[in-house]
Length: 370
Length: 181
Image (cartoon, rainbow over all chains, first blue to last red; front, side, top):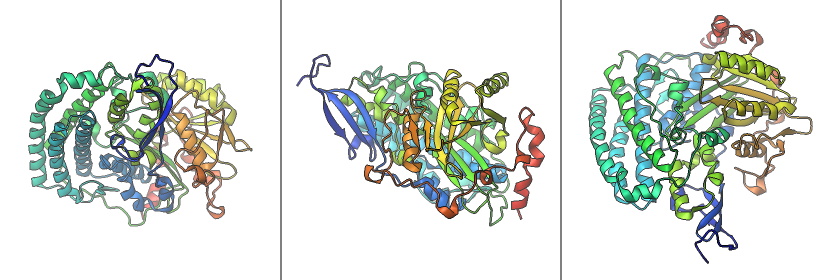
């Protein structure tokens, strides 16, 4: 056995997963190995398949609301935002301005929580144990804030058609402002601890290359796409809710390697803080839930709704026959498309680098399997 | 919107039926109807125009299953929804060699509906286990199957080909009022 890739050695197969700590869920990667080098990496998915699209057909749109939060359990609120937005688009119901602001505030808090979890877990994959202690400390603050207003810590069912279920109060605003101050002061700590660390840089720089062309062929979106220099974010490109009212930037990278993805995600947290700060400053008064009829049938026809989750573009497509339940509900999830180029991406990398690439993709397996 | 007009013209030459729809109500900009044979040419055109693949899926209606494609573009807001009916033998040309991401989407559609994509490099089960490969869970049962025109918007609400989207708005709002009782 040799670690030299040029040696004419016979290849062998290796199963990574379905139970492997670095796949962050029940994902199996079938590896064709040549020594320590990966010749081909074929993801095998579907272990956590729950047939959510069929569930969508057998339940009323109201009954499906809790399921939308169980797609991406790390950043559930943007997923709910998409489904609620779709129903509102089809029925023509509009949420009051205060409710839209609250949706944006909570969605962005959830995005930060998701990125913090990724940051800790990614560095843990690389062998750095300390950072996850710090990121979980910060993430805990977000979860506490969200728990106070939504009643749950992970799989929220907070948004309603026509608004949100509970209004936010003064302690929520104060706590959120305190959190913004806290996290801003922590970014310097993360930079000192991780970003400038030579071991970290050597470990992630220039290992694999994401390109805009690959993103188009595979439908890769989110921070990975933006690391290649393409400024594409659904919040800006096909704006929904009240996002156009806020002044924020879409951070992009240049080189499209894993270090660049890391940088983009870190800067995205700063931008989310900016959005939350502006939303709190300009929070309108008024009701948080519009009057909606108890029985609400979806009109005949189809509609689509896309949102930017922490991982990329999540898009719902619903076809209604005018009945109580959707005729067809298609859920397009970002992790599904982001994982699909793995085989092309990871040719001739070391096995330990494949772990790093899987970490960079920020996969949530239940979202892939649906 | 010059680029979009150009795209509509090129798509019409395929030939394909292109409809501009109201984004605020439908969530996409262009609706395209294709013959099964034109699907690869359609995908090839969008690949040249730098679109990316959002998803490939299907819906079971009578008389035949419809395949749905959604594409969007990084450079300009233009989301396209295309529909094509599978041929009588339940097949449709694959676009997995044009948009590589379609590989998984087509395998999933084969799992859920049993549609065979011809020219696909390896149409194996993706989400379903191998022993359940012929389950086709998203096919409708006899009583639940609807004809294709019953899942479409009523024709008078459709925005006509080249008219600006705002003109059709009052008519299109109607169904919402009915349901608001």
